[in-house]
Length: 166
Ligand code: PNS
Image 1 (cartoon, rainbow, N blue to C red):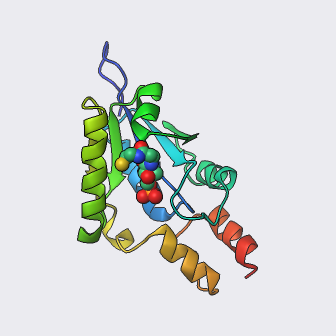
Image 2 (image 1 turned 90 degrees about the vertical axis):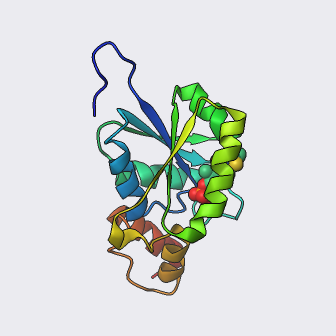
Image 3 (image 1 turned 45 degrees about the vertical axis):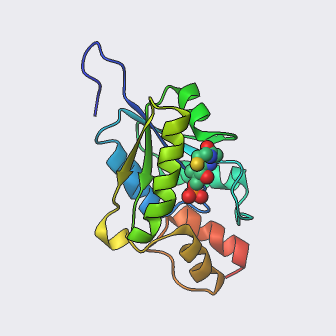
C-alpha cells in the first residue's frame, strides 16, 4: 500500500524475539503491508528466556525469509515505544493466535499506550493453517528430529539442523 500524495508514509513496527522466524511471522509481515507502507521488523536484543539463536542469527534468518519490498529488519534494545519513535512508526503490529495469547498481549498493548499514547497497537490474525504455530514448538519439533519444512523458511530449517545436528 502506498501513502496518499502529500501524506507521510505509514510505518509499522513488528516486534518480537523471532527465535526463529516462522511462516506465521512471515504471514503477519505480508498482512501488515496491506495497511502500512513500510514494516520494520524489530528483533529484541533482550529476550526473557535464553534464546536458541543469537541476535545476529535471528536477524540474518529474518532477512533471508522476508525479502520483500517495504520490509526492513533491525534489532532493538530497551523500550519498544522508544524504538518505534526513533524510526517514526505510529503502529505496533502483534499477532493473536488464540485466546491464550490475549492476556499478555493486552497488558503489553496497554503498557505501550501508557508509555506513548500516540502509538497504536494493531492485532492481526495469522492464516488459519498457521494458527497453531510458534517458535517454541518449531524448536521442540526440530530438536527431536521432526519435519519443520512446512513451518519455516528453508534457511531456518538449515539453521535448525545446524543447531541440533539432525
Ligand atoms: O516474540 P515475543 O517474545 O513475544 O516478543 C516480546 C517483545 C520483544 C515484543 C516484548 O518483550 C518487548 O516489547 N520488549 C521490549 C521491552 C519493552 O518495551 N517492554 C515494555 C512493553 S510491555
